[in-house]
Length: 459
Ligand code: AMP
Ligand code: ZN
Image (cartoon, rainbow, N blue to C red; front, side, top):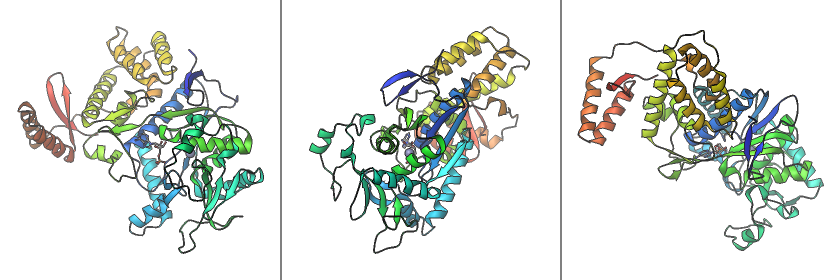
């Protein structure tokens, strides 16, 4: 069955065909490295990693480009407020914006590795592509798409009749409902291409340009780097759903003005992870990182498993109970898999059914349900193992890497686990949670099994 993907541009499922024989070009907007990634950000990267794996499963070679936003992303997406990097540097007690970028880029790479995401074919940093961004802005200027204000060079969105088509923005509505201070911007949707350094203070990150000393706006980096590494017309561009209305609409405006293309043939967007009904955001300062989950004794791949249980275009509400459920399901899958003998062959009917689900716009929840069905099938265990190994190329649960550990549990740990069980039976959830946290801090997790709750070392 042919791969179909939901394209936000057309608001439709479309059959996917690569533009070029040599492989699929995939550009994913990467992290702004002024802080750790939160598990919401990581949900988006997991969706993109799954997309890449599905493309590869279908036999495509993928050139996967991820950028690092290390300059220019302002506190508000509408070009107002401070640069997140410079602000983060002040918050970090004077650690330079450059050192901060380095530290959080490395932390992001480690999160990706822990979640068994495939490393991108190419990473690119905004600060290492300043000349490319200046060249891009020059072309926009030559074609008459820019104007100058006191604080920078702006893109004039009134020059494009279909500006904002990706988000189905209605220009009249925008004009009527102006709430933001326009300043010297001509339209609320106009955005900065180049911002001037303030006259009264020195920025840590700034460069000379034909328009004066300053730094690039946030959107231009992705247009300049995707064009450089994947050409001005490539296969797939991804990001989280918040990028539709501003960042990706502006990337498309720039590409249309410069190259006459909408940059990518397919635009895919992942829905947000919610936390207690509220959108998780990095700038609120209160967020869950992958490390927070590990500190509670969970395996990073339990979070990956959890992300597979919701379709990427549906919002997912994070709760500790759902993570607990994912950890237990993963444990069962791993131990069953590890107990099966080697030497089997693929079950073609199963692989076909699995492929049909993942090719239907990455329906991983259904594919996962099929996997649980496989466990109950009457085929030989060796054949089931070979089949599940094959499918794990898409699931990314690293089933082959897991080793069962037989280890005696200390009496003190068993006593804590029993006390927690008693607290649960007494419906004393506060105490039960506190005991679970205490076990987590000691490196143990609880697991529901056929013979009741058991405790085991966290991995
Ligand atoms: P940022 O580091 O803020 O530039 O965001 C990195 C990626 O995470 C972008 O693709 C965002 O769209 C995405 N993102 C931000 N918040 C969330 C969330 N709560 N759930 C899922 N994705 C998110
Ligand atoms: Zn981007």
